[in-house]
Length: 75
Length: 235
Image 1 (cartoon, rainbow over the protein chains, first blue to last red):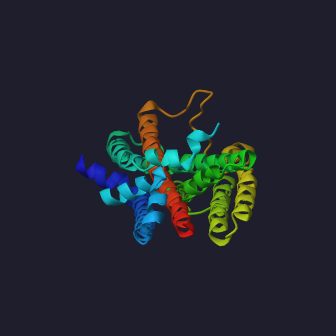
Image 2 (cartoon, chains in turn red, cyan; image 1 turned 135 degrees about the vertical axis):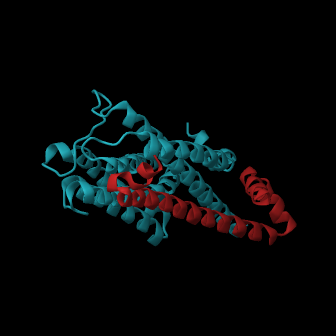
Image 3 (spheres, each protein chain N blue to C red; image 1 turned 60 degrees about the horizontal axis):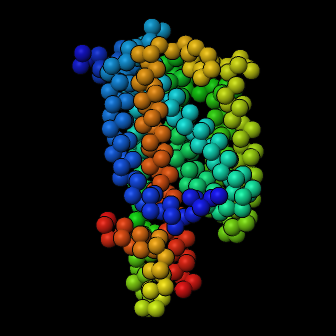
C-alpha cells in the first residue's frame, strides 16, 4: 500500500512534481498577497498616527477607516 | 442598485472572511489530496499519471472562469461607471494568472509520460499560453499606467480582446486535430469520466475555487486600504 502510494507504477516523479509545483505556487501567492496586505495596513496605521486630532476625528467618521484600524490591532 | 458594492460596506465582510475561507480551503484541499493521491483509482491506459489531472484540470477551469469574470466586471465597470467593478477585476487577476501557469506547467509534466514530450504547439496548449499572455498584459497595464481613466480603458480592451480566446480554448480540441484529449466532462450531456474520478476532481476544483476566493479577498482588501491611504494623504 505504502509502496503503491510512493512509487505510483513508476510515475511518482511526474505526479509528485505536478502536485508540489501546485502547492508551492499556492504558498508563494498566499505569502506575497499577505505581505502586500500587511505592508499597506502598516502604512495606513503610520499615516493615521501622524494625523492631528481634527484630521483623526474626520478620518474616524468613516466606518471603513475604523475597520482597518481594528483589523490592524487584531493582527 | 450597486449600494452593496460600495467599498465602505463591503470591507466589513471582506476583512473578516479570509480566515474562514483559509480554514475551509485547508479542510477541502486535505480531503481532495487524499482522494486524488490515495483513494481514486489509476487509469487503465495512463496508470497513475492520470492523478495529475486532479491539479491540471481544476487549474485550467478556474483560470478560464476568472478571466471571463474579469472581462464581465470590467465591462460592467464601464457600463455602470462604477470603479469598484474595476477593483474587483484587478483583485481577481493574480490568482487567475497563477492558475493559468499551474495548468500549463502541470500539463507539460503530464505530457511527458503520455505524449512523450514536454511541450507541443498544439491548439489547446498554445491558446492557454496566449491566455497567460493576456493575463500578463492586464496586470502590466495596472502597473504602468498612473491615470485611472487610461488604465480602465486599456485593461478593459485587453480583457475584451482576450475573451475571444476563451471559446477558442474550449473548442480547440473539437475544431482542430490536437494531441490534447477532448473534454471528458460535459454539463449538458453525459460525462465520459467515472464517478470514482469525477468526485475527487470536483473536490479539488472546490479547493482551488476557495483558494482563488481567499486571494481575491486579501487582494481586494489591500486595494481598498491603498485607496484609504491616498485619502489620508488628502486630509
